[in-house]
Image (cartoon, rainbow, N blue to C red):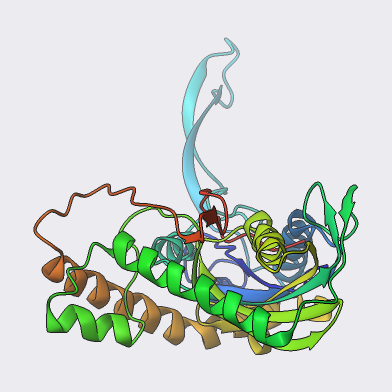
Length: 334
């Protein structure tokens, strides 16, 4: 089961000064991270957070409603002929009703972060000796195999091959000409990003624990999906001349968000979310500014044959793809 960092954005429209809880509502612009317990669907998490935000906003003491002038049709006072006329009347304004919310700046920030192709960190637990139809430990069993011949050294070699092939693919999708010194230095520092859509790209992978039949991996990647991470474990098993399934996926970092930023279920309330958004705002702005500089620098260093929609080859592991071509949408793991 997964214990990831989940990014959410819940933004009301900017209120006027006299709106209910104006100061609090104005702080609800930004991004925050939430800790998703294993087995909880991300949509249920989102709905729960939205409900808690509404409860927090509506629990505050509302000010006197603002008034607006409307001309209402009604009978002329004192007239016996039931003559109708328009009368100026002051009525409550509904444009700033406390239950009226809109979508604002936070969701656009989330879109910007998605297009920035920021890396994420995962811990992935694999189990040697079995294969299933969906690469999950609890999937339909397809095959059982022996794994006594598998060693830590063999696993490390396979991981090195994976990382090398994905790094080559990353250069391809970034459309950089590595003949230039600037582009080469960017690649060495890990600063390059794909310019367009790409399959899952692994920027780093290593084994944290090897205790057959279990092995624990740390994976840094971008544009991934859950299925691609499970497929990666399956491919590792095949390269080790055995089989393997994925029994656990945990996201530990999502861009500039880490597990330390993730709000627990008891913190899914208005005040905690406002504080988390305020704390994360400078880091989000810095990350997006950094990515903008990188993209501008990459455009200046692109090779002479670059085109705007390069599909490029999929990263391969000795003839096998290490994952599908679908682009992840930043959703949580389950």
